[in-house]
Image (cartoon, rainbow, N blue to C red; front, top):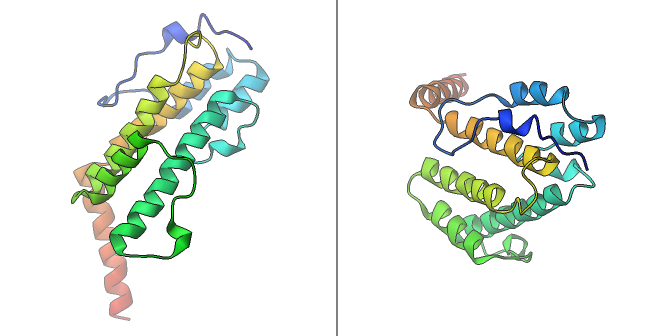
Length: 180
C-alpha cells in the first residue's frame, strides 16, 4: 500500500462544527495527481451511502459493517416508535451498545434535525476512532477524510434558508395536486 507523505500534511484538519472546508470534488481533484490509479479508484467510490462497492479495503469493509448496524438499528427503532410489530423490522444483525443508544436517542428526538445530526456524529466518531495506528499517511486516512467531508457537506445543507426553500417547493407541489 502506498503512503502519501507529501499529500496528507497539506490537508486541513476537519472538525464536525466546521463551516469552511474543501468540497469532496476539490479533494478528489487534489488527490488525483498524488494517488496511484488503483488507490484513486477506491477513494473516488468511497461514499457514506454506497461504500459496499469498494472492494479489497479493510477500512471500507469495517465502515460498511458499521453503517449496516446503524441502518438495522434505525429500522428497528423507527418501527418500534410507529408500533409496527412485523418481524421484518427486527434488528437481527450485529449490535453495539453505543449504536443502539445513539439511534434510540435520534429516533426519539422531537427534532428530526437533531436526530439526523446525532446519526452523522455517530459516523464521524467511527471515522475518527477507527483509523488505527499507522494510518496517518495512507489510503485509509484519505478514505476517512473523504467520508468526513461528505458528513460536513450533509451537515452544512441543514440551513434555515434551504429548509424554507424545500418546504415551499414541497408545499407548492402539494397545493398543485390538491387543486387539480
